Length: 322
Image (tube, rainbow, N blue to C red; front, top):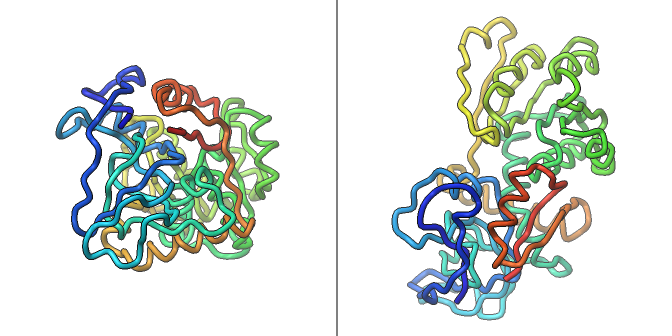
């Protein structure tokens, strides 16, 4: 079968499209054909900087499509079932084997491409806003990188929860489009200070919750945009740089810094998180939540797709189709 693989870390050009062996199906596993592959931020980071244990290595978390083989001991999945599959690697391929536990049925009426975009983006946004951030109706949330997958999900979930939603993006055009998802106030970080603008929009109070997927200096600066007893949630390093935060900076306003990693939550709180992702898939299928797909690339153009994501031109999700 065909897959996009790496032999070493590096820029998008390290991805090669070539033949790899068909996956086996051990006990407790299923084999899933890929109708659609959602490229996640973690996929890009893994390709760029996480040395593979063995090569060729197939990167990627999320794919969706029909089950074609079921291993011994699996009782709740059958050949022909349409599922979303989430695992630490292997999505950038025509098919893959993974534990049946980390699959979700695709609700009727939901296509594979949109389904593949739900678990990580919407699940992560939910964890940031509610599990880590404790967001409540009437509060204000600032979503960094609002035009990204987690950002768009967070805007919608926060608005549904009754919050006032602020978000940053690199252009006024992107911010205008985000109003359709529930954005109340957009902040163009390319033309001004998000800290100053957040203070202005909240009459000097600041945001109760900030969701930060950028890291680096943006995370550090976010402390100054928090309200008293606000929570800054770190969920990514799109800027690919560490953040040196002095703990004393949190003291004056009794603010909190929290970290979110969906994979860790799945491992530690599997029943809760698995059910939560199932509910989010159902919400998308009912039309209560929207998945914005910017572009779809063929699997053989995985390198071009990764480069497009890194160019930060995308408005929404980028998908691969085998």
